[in-house]
Length: 184
Image 1 (cartoon, one colour):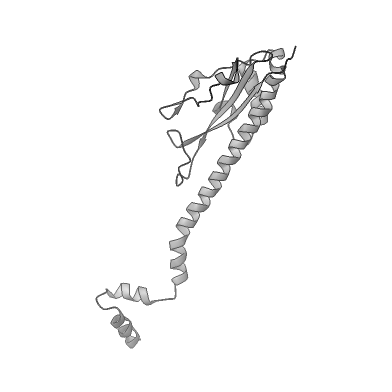
Image 2 (cartoon, helix red, strand yellow; image 1 turned 90 degrees about the vertical axis):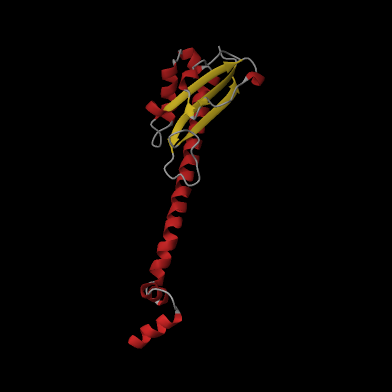
């Protein structure tokens, strides 16, 4: 045994004994390699999962915007005299599970006279969602209407920087632009 230690130490002159023995010992090589690889692997895995969740949440929001927007498109919302809260309830009936719809989904419904006058800039100022500028105006027959739903999705793994708002949030938006039918 002593001869084995001397031969190992002779192969790495100038190194401290502990480091030299550690470098030469192959019994725990797999554990050390796994420890070195596991951290980046797990970070990548969690980043992939979070990216998939963001895409799923965005698609869910877009589908809800289209489904609820059809209520305005066909005149059902206007004929029933829906308020902004009643329209939001229709949106929340489409979204469940991944969102806290009642407290965190924001609705902006605007009508325009032409497609060229539509403004699709997100209501973000200084990294914060500006909810004060949002409103509910479903328009009338033949009007151009933009239905936008916003949700501040929390970002947990910040390796790939999915957040575009302050506080580690990603602003998700579902948008539906159309011309109202000629309902009566």
